[in-house]
Image 1 (cartoon, rainbow, N blue to C red):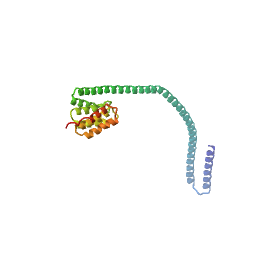
Image 2 (cartoon, one colour):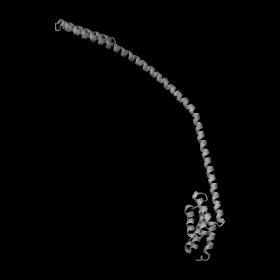
Image 3 (cartoon, helix red, strand yellow):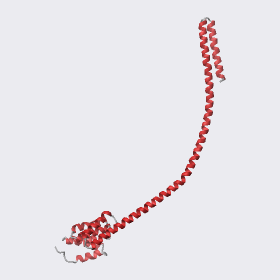
Image 4 (cartoon, helix red, strand yellow):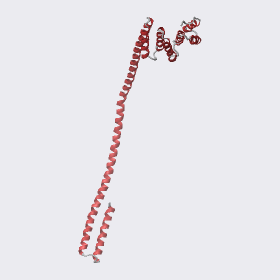
Length: 250
């Protein structure tokens, strides 16, 4: 600041010296001199204002630095408070989260129980439907039994009794003399349920249906297949008796 004042004084002294030289040398008139003096005075005023502005800026800069330091301190304090609040929020939300996890687990268990109960009810209803179809078959109501077995299969195409239902549907058709359709229905058991206990019976009944249709050669091949692949089955015993029996009447 002192350097700026000295520089300003030197500037003003130089201006007056220059004016004096100009005036003394006669290069300018009194009027011109006064005009220059006025301009110098104006410059002096502007210089003073500039000095004040510089001082204000310096003062403001100093204050700004103080304000900046204060703001930084406040910001640091706020960040600390925020961290504290976040910690409290996490502590407060920890318990509800645990409760929600327990509730979610409980809901899953309830859903599993509901599904199990629903499956059990459906299974019971399906079994009753199957048993009703069997009763019709035993009563000789083959067409009604066929419809009942097909209704069961439609609702339980891969159910526990689906293989049996298809076999007995074939039996209904066989009993009605519809041998070709019976063969097709037995074939469903062979293709879709290869591990079913009804496979030997299905093979045997296909052979029997072919015999009824007059195709003894194909029928005997199936009887032999049952005997060779399922020698201990009841179907194999029936197949042996069929191989020694008389040809079916045409």
